Length: 323
Image 1: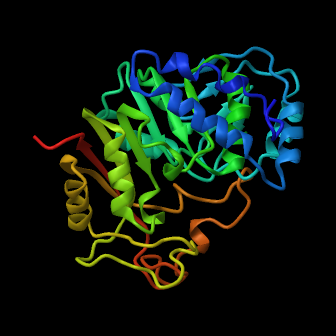
Image 2 (image 1 turned 180 degrees about the horizontal axis):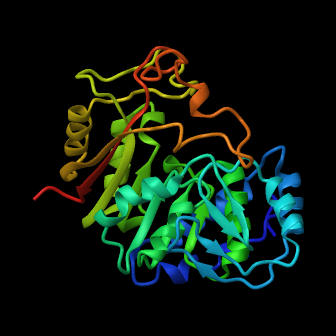
């Protein structure tokens, strides 16, 4: 156990999953150890108690489904459901744990369908920055990735991943409680780097892109998903954007592509440009707080409640270095 009382066992396979990669395994493991040792949250004891109630009948993994199937169906699904509900809210999914369906806030499978055919994941070592509870890691394993290292500082998401890992068994999809700024610059390089839903939360988006570039092999792929505006000028919300406090810049597409080129990425191109709908992001039994429908103007859903353009998301693919 570490200082927070978390067993390190779920992370022990990390080094093996990265064997043969261009990642500095020792540097990454040490960063994770430091983060785990200082992990704290007022609800951590309650979440740990919830994890202790989860009964796993037989660990197994069948990830190539809209709701990845983790673990064999348990004998008492209502008890399992109650335990998993203690880890509310579930933002990313859907998921199926021990036969219990988790209908998360986001239909993350829709986003996956927009990106999966553009990524070369066969045998890849992947870094997923801002990974949430690790949903996309399961989908990447299902598409052939060798190992997915997700980083996210939100303690609840780490706890949700720990629940999933119990049901999945030995699988090289990890969530480390790190911010991108916590990840050592000498951590080495991954075959694929993903950053989805992170860029607009960064005060310095150029610094974020530079960090991503430093962690990507020259022949690798960057997958970036972010809010954009259809206007020519970037949006810098003076207050909130769609009720979110920490949205610093929403770029226009030409500005975003220029930022990627300035960071050293090769031939960035937009794969998809889609508005976020209230069918893709919504409240459910597993996420009972307000969701997108409460963040849009009730008279004109093309605007946010603050009067900004409604969420429009771009998926961009780029190479690791210029030709």
